[in-house]
Every structure is written in structure tokens, then in C-alpha cells.
Length: 425
Image (tube, rainbow, N blue to C red; front, side, top):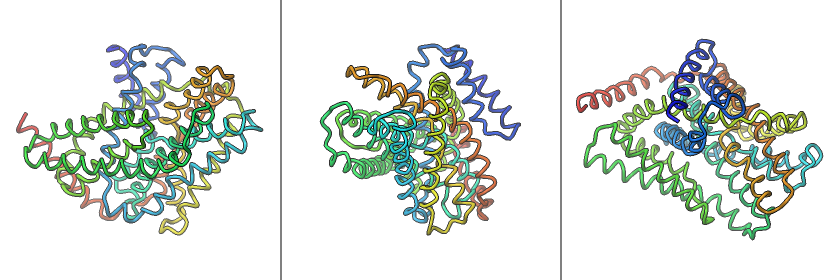
């Protein structure tokens, strides 16, 4: 496993450098490295590493969500609250309903199976979207109108909404008793409980840091450890059908620390920026390793056509959500593009319907189709979506006029954090 990890790190660093020289996001190079080394191609990643891949991807995702939380200012959220709320469910609903309507005629699925596929495809990928939005916040692109913050917040809630709907449909399809009212109520309960717990834990952490004053590196490790426990708590509660949005809780930790202890938040953000160098490699290489080219080919032209039609419907929903906002047409187009990539959620739940059908003795053909289309959606949208977001950010978003002063202030805070650590080292 150690050799596989070394291969991934070295090759991803080289790919990141090469792709950035070509003015292409480095994460695309990492995705490609993972895909080449993964089971669908050369199969050079050890089974042991692939076996813990889901947990490693989750830890890496936690790192970037914490970084995102440390960039979520209350002022920015106040600017975009209503649009973020609309974006959290309308685009996914447009996409899922389109797949539900067209799945029977295009793929031969039943209406219920098509609805399950619609939920699998409906979630935007936090693994692709969140790092790009954090980068734009750092660069102050679109921050005058809170655009990256809006996409960050909406994407996090979008995943909660889609996964709750998906679990309800899977339960009904497999013959389990499902309380539809409880599932529907679970969405706002999950969001509220996740935010509340995250805020409470974040408040406790900054007070503990005030009292004991550990060095910034130890603070970052403590925050990371607590965030991992929160996500595991989310899995525990999910198994018991108790709604809790763990990823929102993780982001809320950073939000409350930024709100109450801004200097501390910038110190922690600097530390997580360094951790992210390694976490980014692990996240995108292992996401790339999950790409199943044969499954994508099995989906065929009809599968690809359905994905593209559904993305068009999603884009209409995203555009409608921004109507009545202060965004101009370029900024609205950016939001549409930023809301397209698929990866993390599809890799996590795309195979679940097939496993459930097999365990229940049901025909597995529909499950194989759902898995194939989910795989194709990742292949089609993860690398192209990352490139499109990077291009759109530079071409469509303006740089905030306060960029220079903000950058100087943050650089000073981060320099202080590094200086403190060097003195204590």
C-alpha cells in the first residue's frame, strides 16, 4: 500500500505541474492519474488502498469543507441566502424529474427505477465544486456579490436533499416500510441539526483554544479530529434513520470560528491549506480510480444522451434560481456551469441499487444500468466540469476591488500563524 501511495503522490504532483503549465486545472491531471492507475486501466493501486479509499476520500473532503467553512462570512451569506436556498433543491429537482420522465423510454427502466437514477444523478459533486469555490474566494472573484459562497452553501444542502430523497425511493423500491412524512421532514431537520451541532462544537473549540492557547498546528489537528468524529456520527445516525447533515456541521465549525475569532480562523485556514496539498492528491486520485470506463461504455449513447438532457434541465433550474438576484448574465452563467460536475455522490451511491437488487433476489439489470449511467456521468462531467468552472471563474467573474487589502490582511494573519509555529517548533 505504501508503494501505491508513493506512486500516486509523485505522479499526481507531476500531473498537477504539467496541467497547470497548460493552464488547465491540476485536479484534472490528478483525476487522470487515478483513472490510469485504477482498476479500470493499469490496476496499479493496491487492493488495500482501494479498500480504504472511501474513508480516505471522506477525510480529504472534510479538509476542504473545513477550509470552505473558514471562508463563509456572515456578510456573504446574507447577500445570497435566498438564492442559495433555491439552488439547494430546484436544479436537482429539474434534473431528477427529467430522468424520471425519460428513463423508461430511453433506458427501459421502470418509473421508480428512473426516479432512483434521477436522484443518483441529481447531486452536484462537492469534491469538484468546493475546492474551486474556495480558490475563487481566496482570489476574491465574484465575492462582491457572494457568488462562490452561494454555490458553496447551496451545493452542501443540495447533497443532503438528494440523498434523503434517494434513500426514501430505495426503501420503497426494495419493499421496506418507509414513512414518507418523516423522510420529507428529515430534510429540514438534517440541515438544522447539522448547522446547530456544528455551531455549538465550533464555539466550544474556539473557547478551549482561547483558554489553553495551543499552537496553530495543534488547533488544526484538533478541529480535523472533531470533524471526522462528526462525520462518523452522521453515518451512525443515518443507519438509525435519524436525520443529521454531518457535512454541514463540518462547515459550520469553520463559519462560527471565523465569525467570533477571525484571526484564529485565518491561522487555521492557513494550516488546512497546507494539509490540502496532500488531501487534494488523495481525493482526486481516488475519485479518478473509481471511474469505470467499461460501465460508461455499457451505458451507451442513450445513457450519454439522457445525462446531457438532464444537465440541460438542471441548467434551466439553476438559471431560474438566479432570476431576481443582483447577478448579471455572466455571473448567472457561472452559477449554471459551477452546478454541473458529478463525482463524489455518484461514486458513493451509484452501486447501491445493484447491491440491494441482488440481495433481494430481484432482477439486477436495472441496477447495472443505474451503475453504468452513474459511472458515465462522472466520466463526462468531472474533468470537463472542473475545466469549465476554472475557465468560467476567470472569464465571467470580476475581481473584488478590495482584493489587495484583503489579501494583505490574510497574508499577515497566515504569516503570524506560521511564525508562531516556527518559534514553538
